[in-house]
Image (cartoon, rainbow, N blue to C red):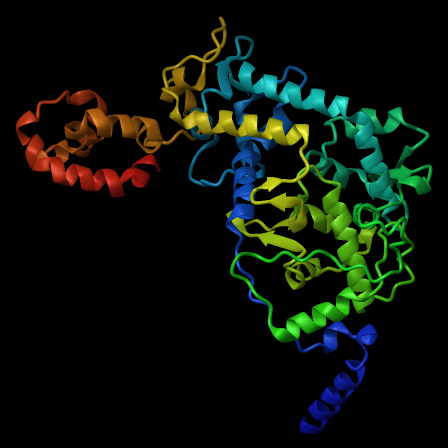
Length: 471
């Protein structure tokens, strides 16, 4: 065993003499201690909030009447990514009366669901922006296909990332067939593939190359050639993060390797070498650069392994280069972000869909703070979720939903105007739990004499107990 280890280290040291022959499997590099970037984590936090609504919208808007049975949505609830697993879908919708409408269908007497007019307007605006940017979307799709080895991508994979790239919902049914001189649909093994018809050399210029050429022009260096030259990637680390000396030495040697464009023939590059690793970094740099917000979840990148020649452990690539990519772990989901594309929590390059996303966030954040009795849409055969009785949601409605779903606005209002109501149980400890939970209706300030006694306790609970009540 000792002789084997001695021979192993001798071979490794021989290979490490030349930076062009560094093999990843022989490198003994200290583990990079990653540090979170709060500004970039804030971006993924917004995505976590919107994800269930977009997934429900994809199902509902796919229906011809833009409405669907509640029972059907309950059956596929697991696909929506609702964080609170104990909360029923009806309970989730009840928290957002400005987004969802649950109504009794007069034809079958069943409960159906659809979106309010305000949320529908935002979805229509999203479709309008996608239609206005159709020419740009065609270029992005062509460049994605040009980065693959066979010039084709599975249709389901493209449909899964359509919002990331700003593609329309009818990408496969309308957009692709509308441009037969660029794309064609191919049936292979019970799956549809989008195949590239025409190669355009004018599009085979990566965003990294464009930026390097522009910087050279600004410096008066003229038009330069980037491919095959040792152009380094921009390195930005998280606040308070520093690389060790050995990591810096390896990174400097790696940066001196020639740049391989993602539009070049990469099948000749030997896998497992630093040169192959730099090709993968350049490819993922271009992949993220083509997205709307310069980021993508690792889960949607993995299905592209075969098309782009990615390794099964592609996540290790992002961890090895934390100065180029940032991996956010918010919400238990890995999101890969291009560091150089952000300033703080805002992307440098503006996009209409980014501005629209802010409107979605506003309407979603406003939902739990609205009074439950507020009627968002008034139609003859429609009632909002807030007006449907608990008996109508007998298919899984929790008896404690009313108590659990008290909004933060209601709690704050009662803290300011009815502190005695909330803490009546402190005064009358013999009252039942039902009476205490119904404090919003049963008491109207009868504990005036005890207000001075409870003032200190009320202030303490106002500071430390707000989050528990909102939950």
